[in-house]
Image 1: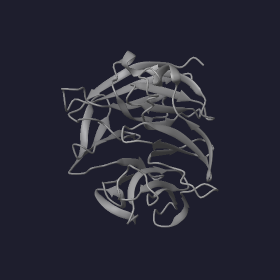
Image 2: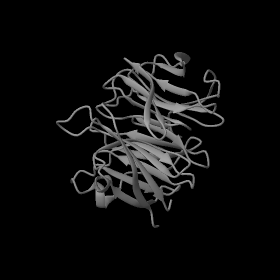
Image 3: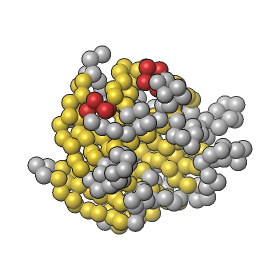
Length: 287
């Protein structure tokens, strides 16, 4: 498959890193939990700052089906941002981690507050499916048919064109992980990286931090440690793996995909130069 990438724009910021990132029709939401900053940028002939929220440790965010921002702020609550942060759902005693909205549901990952690792018999890692009101729980996914935990630490969620749930499941404190695809409550496939890229360090270091689905149904995964983008088919088969260093992107840690075949990628700041994380806009084709 002839997949190509072309740099269309580079946007500078004063953030340590950019994660997560969400593209709307006319704007771009970016955040950095380390800097406790959440910004909405106007996207036009010039980049403008529309809104800024300080002292907000945003771990994930997504757009609801009516275009409003759903987010977590380092606690147990799901918030809907309409000028102010309005509580939609309380997941206590669990901690909210990741969120994705579809036309029919809001999907959230949660974990216990006992620490991410090591995982013990008391650890709780769930995928919670809510009705669109965000209040009513439709389903909870936690164990397989043998009553074994399905997840280690679900850090990002999206869905494919079939409605299957795609999850970035972090496996260790060093951020090694996998991409999982769930059909209802069954694991359809799991992707652990591309040997030509992830074996070069000698530790099979696949480090997925974010993912998105193209309008054609293919999957793009940001592999931070290796500064790479993995393009997967809907079935989890590798189509192509790009080194983002070839387009001057070091440590990509967030991404979003718009309907104009543009990848919006947030990166980590360069070592020794804090507060200079960039947003790169790439035109992709072939997937």
